[in-house]
Structure formats: structure tokens, C-alpha cells
Image 1 (spheres, rainbow, N blue to C red):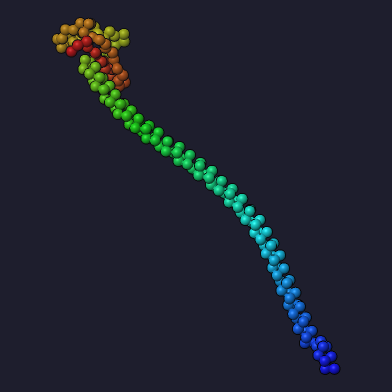
Image 2 (cartoon, rainbow, N blue to C red; image 1 turned 60 degrees about the vertical axis):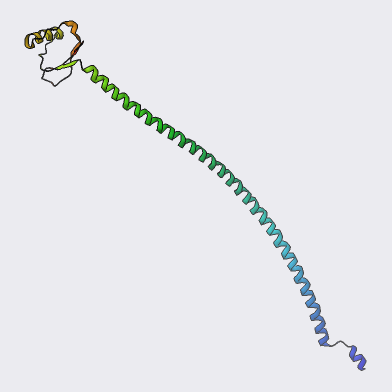
Amino acid sequence: MRKSMDKIVKKDDIDEIVTNIMGKLLNKWKTEIKKETLEEVNKERVKMKEGYDKKFEMVGRKMDSINFDNANFLEKNAALHKELRKMTEEIKQIKIGVTEGIRMANENEQYSRKKNIKIHNLEERRGEQLIPELITTLKDKVGINLNKTDFVAMHRIPGKHGYPRQVIVKFLRM
């Protein structure tokens, strides 16, 4: 009987067997759950990576476009600066030319005025003949004899109201 009793399964043995089986099942389930979870995580990671890669590629293309546009703007800016410097130099040269032209015009004007005389307080009358009257006045009051051929031009210039206008006389030679 003892031999038979040894063959009878005891509660502790059953507990040990069940615990052993359950442990193996739990380990197997854990492994399968881990495997399935890792597969799902990897699938999601791949999807996310593809999405980010597409977005990074798009951002990269936009950056390339911006860099290209920036390079074009820099090139245009440099060309405009070069043109501005050239125009500034041209303006300086034009200013020098204008200043020289004004100086020469003033010299010419002064030279041409060498033969001019401005006469003040010459009585002004309606329908006056300035050249003959001046010839007579200069002969009578100053003692200078002149002919009509000695004059190039003679006319009155604007003056103050109530006073006789001044007369400009341009002589042929002086």
C-alpha cells in the first residue's frame, strides 16, 4: 500500500504542477503579448517615421526654394547697389558740369554786360524814343557825342511803382 500511496498524487504535487503549468502559460502569454505589442508599436513607429520623413522632405524643399529666392534677391540687391553707385557717380559728374556751366554762364553774362550801362531817373514818357532822347541828353548834359550806330539795344526794365523805370543800354563797343 505504501507503494500505492506513493503513486497517489498529493495536493502539494498538484499545486506544484498547476503552478508550473500556469507559470509556463503566463510566460508564453507574456511573450506573445510582448511580441504583438512590439509589432504594433513598430508599425506605428514606421507610419510616424514615414509621415515625419514626408514633412521633413517638404520642409527641405521649401528651404531650398527660400534659399534660391534669397540668393536671387541678394544678386538683384548687389546689382541695384552697383547701379546706384554708378548713378550717384553720374549725378556727381552732372553736378560738377552744371556748376561749371553756371560759372561759365555767369562769366559770359558778366562779359556781355561789360558793354551795358544802367541809367536811373531818365524821365519816362508815353511813346518815347529812347535812343534819340539819350543821344540828346548825353550831348547836352555830359558833352558826349554818340550816333545811333553806337547802340545795340536800349529798353526800360521793371522798377518801383511811382518812379521812372531804369534804362539798360547796350553799346556796340566801349
